[in-house]
Image 1 (cartoon, one colour):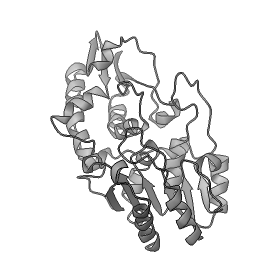
Image 2 (cartoon, one colour):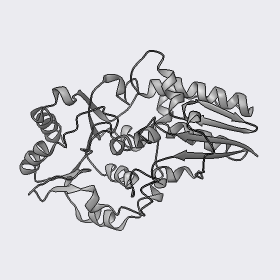
Image 3 (cartoon, one colour):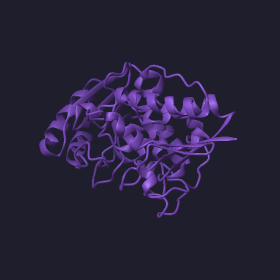
Length: 311
């Protein structure tokens, strides 16, 4: 049987969860159209739960260090597709990652797969590739279910950890979040990165989501994984805030982007890294160019206060 093996190794930094998710919509199409005729597998260095709902087997790679710098590797009836370098080549002098960039990258990937395996993958519009998650794989989480059942507050999910790619500021926004939580007791402020607080309406995803099965630290930069559960939680939140980190990118799903009642706020460095750039969506989306050099807790405080008051 012909084989198609995707792999992702992000330079010397390991795989980033956001990179997995931004490509997911394209792989979903490929799996749906080709899985009966081509053996499709995916190798990456993140937790195996990260793309569990794709239904793809992971595999061991018989590749050299030099192979990881190649966009494509052809071996008999096996096509290896590098989802890191293949995309980076598509910059063509431009800087940033967004859905328009992904379309250009995946057009070439589709062309390569079509040529090598004699198939006919057709690229759709950008909105088609906003990824979805089959939450039936992840929502049977007892702690999370109990939290959702017992919390009557409005909810704001804040992905306040650092963006591994350096696309935003490193500060965990604790001073801004503590100030807001003290003023808006009718909101739960659910954060992905812990900090000291005396506010009972500040919650942490580590405490309200079962972390799941651990894996060997040598094979994954994160021994446990709740990133899909965080995304599921986001569907119950009125406001989603992030800095282009993995948990935030996992919340940019069809469920959230095409919900006209949802408010999404993004703080990051470059407009061209705005995943919603050029995209048609229904949510109320706000982007702020805020990064290490011009970061201000007061800016975060005022932005979030304004949006909370509108809910």
